Image 1 (cartoon, rainbow, N blue to C red):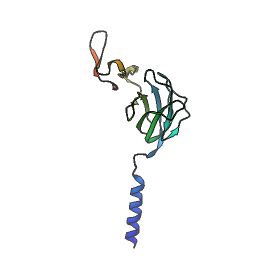
Image 2 (image 1 turned 180 degrees about the vertical axis):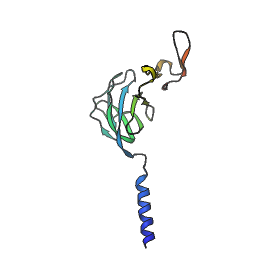
Image 3 (image 1 turned 30 degrees about the horizontal axis):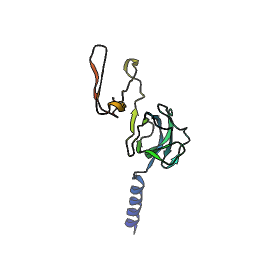
Image 4 (image 1 turned 90 degrees about the vertical axis):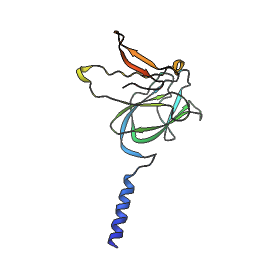
Length: 163
């Protein structure tokens, strides 16, 4: 009987450590959301089917960083004041980290999530990230060159971020 009880406790502990797709893991992450869909209506933001108190975002507007419980979360964008889902994606965020999430339109998992590196760089240089959101050139890649015509970033695809 003792062995069965120990097995039951072990199984219970093991089950409580696992997570599913909707798991909130504890702790918070800092999340910034930016609307980069040109011409879009202002977007209401929903996390896990609950409307966020964040004001609706228009084109090129951002939320600034806000705390969000870490884990696997669903984010939806809906045209302001409607139930029409403009985009639905999954966020996978870890506690004590910073993320930027870009609303790019589309229906399923079309938005871009980028983890932001907020540690100071060597020699106090700025950190710069390039992201290709040029809808007019979405079938082309982009190369970024310095003033000596040396490629800093090559073949950056649509909805792709540089390091």
